[in-house]
Image 1 (tube, one colour):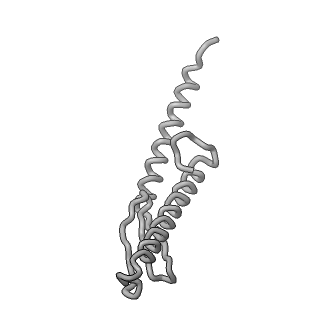
Image 2: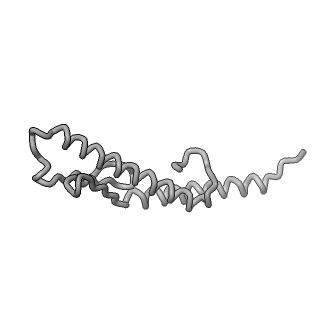
Image 3: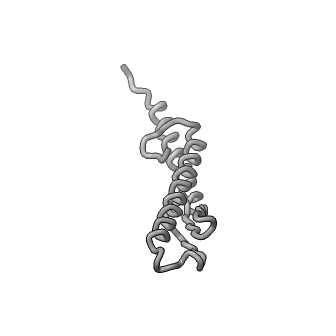
Length: 108
């Protein structure tokens, strides 16, 4: 059975094109800003599309040393929600890129 080198070359070119598009999408995602607000607007966490937290805003009313546990819980809830939104955005970007085809190593 003969190996069709032109078909292999086509596959390599397609893989390189997909890698280029993935890198472009990742750069695009990194520039995105995602926010999560909890506690009736008392805590707001901002993350970038790379999944890094970039800001935490607290309303003065929620800063009470006697309620530190509640504040910690609100911050964690907002941070986790922001990161879930980042993951969902990344998965949607990759689904659009691959047309729903699940490729190893990509977030879905």
